[in-house]
Length: 433
Length: 168
Image (cartoon, each protein chain N blue to C red):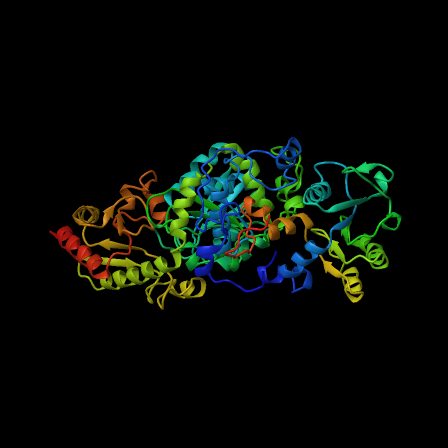
């Protein structure tokens, strides 16, 4: 092994998987098994004590799932990763490993609706409180930090608000208070943005979206950067003997992948939201083509955004890849160029002229753009968040999350750009009737 | 931690994966200084793992001198060892590493390995000047598992990109 630095296109295909030792199979085998035999009672004891690494039970680890974990860790430039049954499970795993009753989180207000519910409702039931702040203002994060704050949480690119987070600035705020910055990097995918390189400490993904890319399979991943000092006094769960795993001191024992090990052994093992090997395999089929797909998603989305900007039936367009977007400079700083266009993902939002009902008419008139609650599919997807993904929130929360009543969100797919523009035009014409 | 760049260690020969691989291939007899007999301590974890991978582990710890640790006789000091060693693996605080570096040189060891969280720069410079390999702030077990396979199962980014079957 030399010190050659492999690029994301290569990592997306190779990282985490070498030919099978037993059979020489070049593609990844699906290890569809719940359990793994021990060589001896001694070997079993060493595995349970974490004194050797290996597979015990697929709720903890599985060889097919491990290939996905290492691949995403490599694409993010992280130290280690842990996969989970869905993106929400990944986010819950990251936060439940970090936090306990009495702790406080400072989070961006412009978040995916499920994330708002997790923080504002589900974790609140366990005595963990959250203050939501304006994601465009690093000083707002600083002002909301309290003595009991233990994490800062935000999305690199907000869904559906498309707010771009100044990751380095917010990381500085978090680190000045001895706190880890947790970033949901689902929308850019690890091809367009690597938050760990910008100072974030933990990345979470819904692998259901661009990583898989095919809209067939749920999955999630957390990635640990390996640079955060868990020994700063604020995280006794990382430094003191673990009550959840017979006295192991995770930070002392595992160093720069201590958080990933603790998430796996304390949280994943006990709450049980493990990813199935079959699902890991399907997601990996998508990951192999992630760089190619992201380039096309970005190129198509930029053309759609430009088209909508000049469309008489559209009142506004929000796409951070447009040069006149207020955060375009941040996109250029933080996100990879995709085939010569800014890497702002395939997500964009716009307002259909008229009332909220016009937006609903647009969606219903679409011919092949699919009305559903997902993003990052090969297919172009369209949704009205205020009446679907964000309907559990009241209007103030919806606005805080960037889901205004007239907002229509497009997840621009990989169909031919002329066909996408044709479907948009005919649906807009129908909405205006 | 102010920024990632300020915490990234400067390049050190002991951080080169190729050299780490060579060290772990060549150093088969390891004196583990500060080896605990308590199963949940990192030193016991690491030494037990290495023993399981075929390395000869020689325990060095005055607390257990004359007793057996990991089924091997424990001595108080490196100088009390009755056989040649390839590596001195230090589970001691950085201030205690100086004399261990001297002993590693005089005993003809090939490598001084300072464990996670242990970085004695003077000892590092001294052994390197004497022609030994030097590794700091790394766990011998974690590096073995990273470079030779096992850590892959724990979702760790091993950096291995290859079309050859994984080594056993």
